[in-house]
Length: 80
View 1 (cartoon, rainbow, N blue to C red):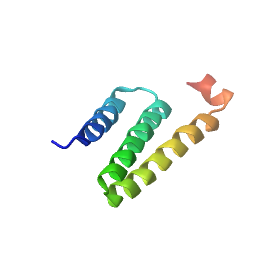
View 2 (view 1 turned 90 degrees about the vertical axis):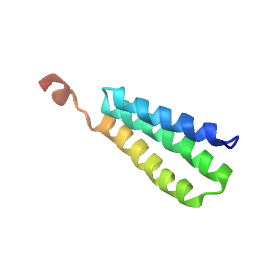
View 3 (view 1 turned 60 degrees about the horizontal axis):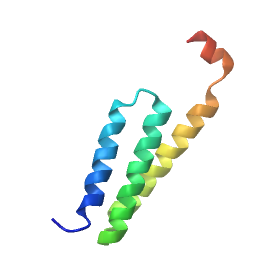
View 4 (view 1 turned 30 degrees about the vertical axis):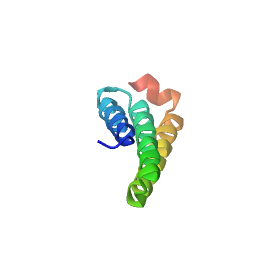
């Protein structure tokens, strides 16, 4: 195993743990963090497809997690 592989393994663990989170916004934030870890790993090993794919994933996860939080209204919370 290469010395940098531990970053990829930690990113995998973080991403996998996101499936145990109940809140959708928090799930997406954890997935964004894991994707950023994959970006770092991709840079370190020189794999641009890994970098680009995970930048897209991180951006989408971050955007959707914060936009979902802003879209909630007091009426929607009261109806739940």
